[in-house]
Length: 133
Image (cartoon, rainbow, N blue to C red; front, side, top):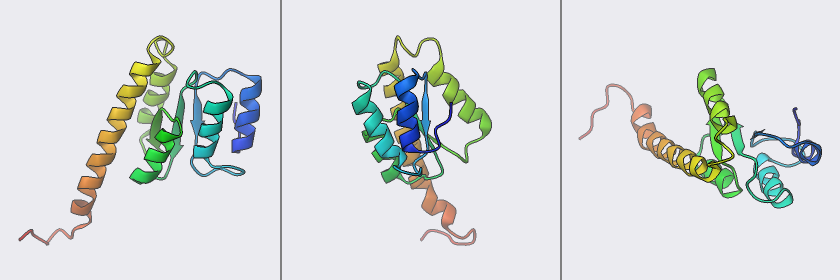
């Protein structure tokens, strides 16, 4: 099922029990972070994994998504295989029995990736002929 806006997602979740909720950050009516927060408040905590699929890659946005109750964050620019693997990870048969463990592992992986990206970004922006002094 697909909800094109934050309000549609909330309405869908009133009718169905989802195995996974994928949210973009930029959505009509209310953004994905607020939608995530409301899903967690309305539907009793962390029963259903919520993963952000967004083009925004700044650490502040990622952290806000996680603080709102998100369980993972995937960049839209990721290869399709990576996106599918993450969906499989969060919908796998063991997800209900060790959800907290999976959540902690995914959050740690994400924080490490964000730190690595931000440490490497200045090096990637430096012209090839520039050397450190």
